[in-house]
Image (tube, rainbow, N blue to C red):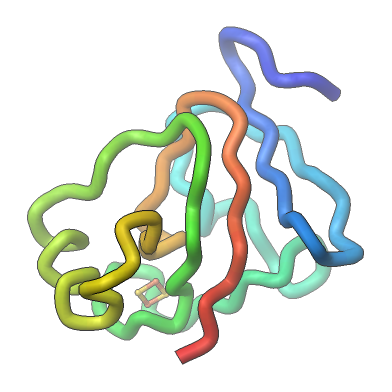
Length: 99
Ligand code: FES
């Protein structure tokens, strides 16, 4: 399914996982599982860093708390995000960044 005004498509490049179509601006951690994505989650609250990814596409910017964690975990990676904190506003590509 293609993205439209109400849905976003989440891609996982260079993996065997199929793209997922989700409602826009819904937290990704409610929809990504071990079965449908290569992204692992721990706390799901933006603290542990387990879900660190490189994210490209249409997504809301990190809030102050996420930005603080990103500056510690990935200070030199401008595309780094915590997948559990991402709310997509359009198509997004996620690549897991193993710590
Ligand atoms: S799951 Fe812990 S920071 Fe995202």
